[in-house]
Length: 628
Ligand SMILES: Nc1nc2c(ncn2[C@@H]2O[C@H](COP(=O)(O)OP(=O)(O)OP(=O)(O)O)[C@@H](O)[C@H]2O)c(=O)[nH]1
Image (spheres, rainbow, N blue to C red):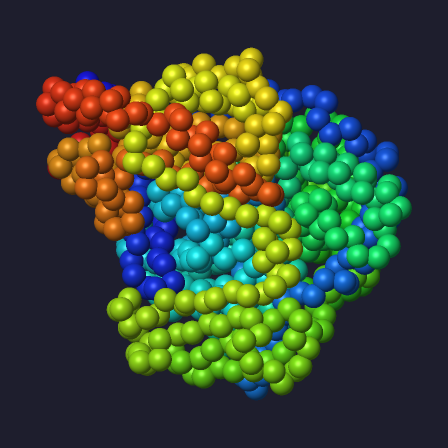
């Protein structure tokens, strides 16, 4: 008999329900991660950059990055429709917060913390690099929405462009239209993919507002929050320093963009930030934290810096910190800047914050804080209602250009003009094709992704052995023995920057396991139950907590034999050896012979127990209440 453990209550505060761009309800779930995130002891000695040396080479390095940036054709667009929005309307619009940060720095962790610790209604747009939007599934799983309000939307197709073009704006517009409920959003948070460039997104936003493009009616871009991994940031900069020290790479076309691409993205994401969250301070030495602060200051003097572990700072505190900095800017510099509104958050924080104080900057250089250049811009033709199309391209400089072949097509169903239509078959799905040339993560940064899927469990013995050969620290809540005895530097996972997804382990037939690896750290944690492992009665009970999520799983993740039990892990990295990674995991799957006995065991267990046990008293009480 297999006993399942739900160790956390569903989150009610978030009140989140997620929809797809196609406007079909996707549902929500009530399960939270069943185990507290495992916080390993600080790792010392990684990243040799010190605060004293950081600033000196950065100034030079950053100018090198700017030179390269100038050489790159970038995706930019503007809109030709006559302005209709007044400044007044913009001021009363819902503030949009862009949450940026490199792969695996902790964006989803921070977002989940924000949602769990607010009673405000926060809208969410989730984007992810890979075709499978794992982040969105995580956000949905921890959401709970008794009122049936739509609070979240996910960008489809794993769009990894630098700016997301118009797709993001259209999705925010859709979210506002479909939101329902009586309460307006206090903010809309957009979790950008790890390779997105917030400056480009900001430029698109500003451009759309300036032009009075209807999709930005009712919203305004408020803040860019960039989250950095304090334990690896400096190490990435050391890579940059090595390139900088090579004179042959300074002039002319470097050509090896992929070699310094991670740094370039980090710089761009840091520069665009109003607030920088230094996360993972538990994994960083004091020197690393100080050096990271020095680097951030060198890149972006104006940003407010907040330190956290596991993103434990509320959205309210983040915004308050930025606003107090803005007050300081006003006072010291006499600037009338940004036009921030105060946000009313009476009850915002439900737990202690594990973060240090907010950085107050003595120097406030306002030069080149956020450039909103509209060079390279060109036009987009927009028809009202559902029939409009946009196009743009990185290298098109014709302001009158409406040539769809220049890169980005974005089409709405032509045959539906009902603004209240929720029929997905009417094609509200914002199908788009990207041929941005230098603007995709793959072309610009050499970063690609693929999703490993399988419908068999992983053998615990072989999986454990395989993990041992992967030379990075690994942590597990599953009582697996994970030592690094046999590790090899040529491991196919060495080029993987980020991997994440859901695993099905032989030894955990009913528990969904979440695999999360970012840079130099890997964790396996419990992530609730597989729907496919529940009895009918249990499914009914769980559906009351997570209405819609079961239907979503049936629609998207289902297999006739095993339900939603599966391997679904996204791998993101530079110059990935996909075949080798697939082979590495295939080796761990149960063989045909092993599957026969596994099936027998599962059938016997199902007969034996009949129903999954609810081991926690707290959960038993919750389930009891729901069945009354
Ligand atoms: N030790 C430690 N781990 C953390 C911290 N914050 C997040 N993590 C872990 O880092 C991993 C990545 O976190 P996510 O929140 O998924 O990162 P992300 O930026 O959303 O990742 P992508 O969307 O894939 O770019 C997860 O395993 C988290 O549990 C932290 O402060 N300390």
